[in-house]
Image 1: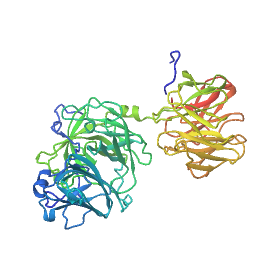
Image 2: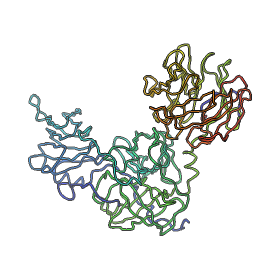
Image 3: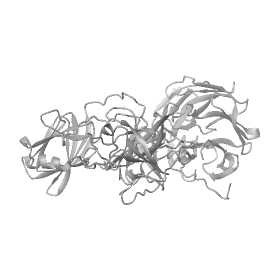
Image 4: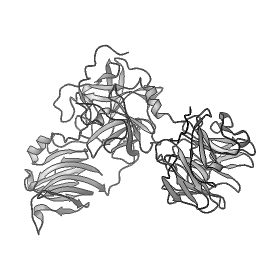
Length: 613
């Protein structure tokens, strides 16, 4: 939290047609033999490009692997006609996934046909580039096929933007669902990533470096180019899983490793544990990745294989395939987790960094073997970034319209003026920076005023009716708190995801109940509840659309003010009370009346606030 501090305080041939199913392929003073191999980053280069050009006359340059050359005699989703092609009838055909990208150079192209795919193409005519939309199951002419102004055109790019065929539901073994795929830039680079926390993945730093072979340096902060990650989907051609942008990078200077923070946390995907035990020579690890294989450019299914640890160095290890004929580490496997079983579950020992890429598709290298970056010794570094901050307390002093916040020990940490007399204080993470800042609700005009810097108003929204009680929470798990109200006249909550429109409503409670909001089950989404002063009991639900009581906790004494917070930093909110006369905050264990946090702060007339400052 940024708090004003006034005083310091403490193919057509086997070489061209690409198939769609195959497998992946104490520190020793001796330097690892594979540490000088190339970084295993997928650059999107189309396999056997020169062979394809020589055979067909079409230059297929780069892409995401979802649009592949295929014989026109079989099933296809895209057909391109061009005068200069060397193929029969001057056509080339492609099979395409539900989405896909391919950069090409096909001179004198004049028609595109699609089957069950919506296509956007880039063409250039007389030096002018324009977009061409070809809906599914249609054919569109351009360039020399124009009846009014025939001119030579060059096809530069194809993007599949949709399909009438819905992706299938996830199936198969989900053991390695914590391994995901990174897409960096506009289909510029691709890597594997490893989810180690709902908010964070481990990845190879080389995936984000402009030219890692020259300088594998990456700046901390937001990625230079838009980056997305998909986790929780072991077959990328299916539905489900979790896809979101990467918004922050935390690189290591001493090894090819970066932590990458997800814009929207993946609460529905179980993260991998990180091993705290060093690897040993001769030990077997399993590598799981989305990189190339011996026959595939961009497999949709995650592939795994056993590897044996060779030389162990301070920051990395050599790996050799247990069965070389069936496994190799290729482009796109940078960031792939190398795991072993600990307590019956996979634990990450290292992540992919480099590979000789022998036996990989479109590789002439004969050397095999890989080099992985160790993570077993980085538990504290990882924990420092993934640890959820425990809640701390604070107060709002109505007479002065001032917020005062404390550290976990009850010492003043900062204060600021915000709002006006008669306002109701609020705290929340309004901008997804993982810190709670201030806000107020003004009953006189039913307006929320929210600040990202504890000084200026960043969001001003009118919501609700006279007599409503304001509530705020992260209703959809996107990492941003948004507004809502509790209407005592109907005993109902009305909640908004966008601070404008109502997204959820739920009736809960009885007259004179106090509304409560919190993440009671640790799924990353706040849900509602009520506190009943008549029996000093909290009634809480884990569902947005139901008033079913999932947690019932009696805690406190008559006259106490109900509060909630994550008192121990375990990712779940627990109930608590504020005793005004003693200006004491008391937090309970989950679903318990046992006090696990207690601190005094403020004065008797203050209004309690809770947050992660």
